[in-house]
Image (cartoon, one colour):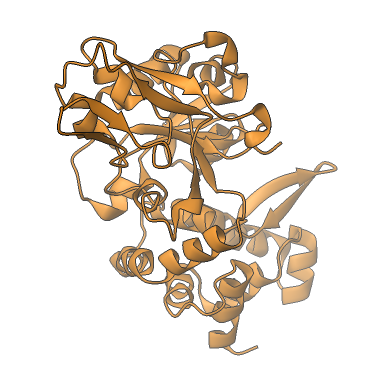
Length: 331
């Protein structure tokens, strides 16, 4: 396989076969030999060393460096370490951007990818109605009926039940640099925390600090998000609508499939609303507007159910109401 072919094949495995940018990103992350090793995954050290004709300690050193760069991940199977590629383009994007020694060329290429190839992928995800990569976690305070909140859609409960928590830099704002909102607010949980601590891309935090990060994120107008599944919680992202690789595409009908809303929707009590406009200003998806009478109105189709509007309402005129069933979140 030629060098150019292997970089293209790695891109194909991430469902980006026709990307012109991603092979160039792979080239900044891996040498030609390293790319061939990544292409041979999943595998273990012994089999890889045998295949590439090198001592196991040398292969282990190469895999360790690729792990550090974000190109390789580890999994334990039957007491043995198995190495694998990133599962999807988002995982590759996030892991390599946290590579501290990443060359500037790679960061520039990721910026180019975000504006060219990435939207096309999200259009496909939306067209074929593929399950969204991430979903919104509602802020609990304004939810009308607390009994309707499930454990896997409650950020505080996710943190309280986690065996380990770490915080990392928000990769979206690190890359895009479009605002000055807090950077160190991306919470990694359980396996996510294990990974970032082993790799050295984050630091351990206790529950109290993690809860403070949640609160600070809400006050900064950031939206809580996690993986779109009931069973796995490895991250709570806190992101903005100008940099986020999910949120900034959620207002376009062609790409909105990338992010699932929460099971809730904002509802305004018109008799209580004082037409202050704070909810309009903070809504990350422009789903709250004011009519001629200046009373706040919520676009049901555009609302993602984050709850930020309710947190800034000075008269508590906004609550989140349950509008979707439990099975809306994939099992």
